[in-house]
Image 1: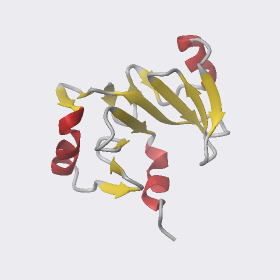
Image 2: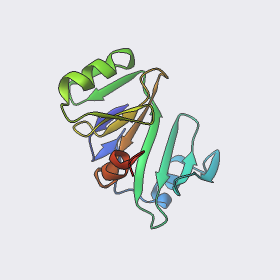
Image 3: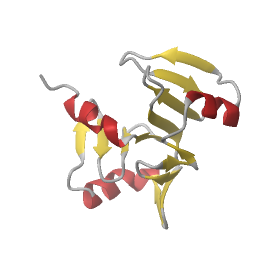
Length: 130
């Protein structure tokens, strides 16, 4: 996965619409609404999740290596990289969330990484809090 935090994932900008994704990738393998109210376009190796308004929230992709500019981080080293490089990182529902890098992932379940739109960080921070 090539990531510019909060800007684009593998060249696809967070400003992309559902229609843009479908034009670029074709029809998804499946389209479902998840338990947090996002519509997911599933292309097997990548999943795009949108709000009802059409705003792109998350992009989850298989990422054996996460590329952040000139830095390449193998998934097996990603948790240590995040904990060392992002003092604001936090854990929610089994995910390690990095506001600095704009990602969420489950360290023990390789190799899926979710790139986040900046506007959805408060929802991640609020998971499990009353």
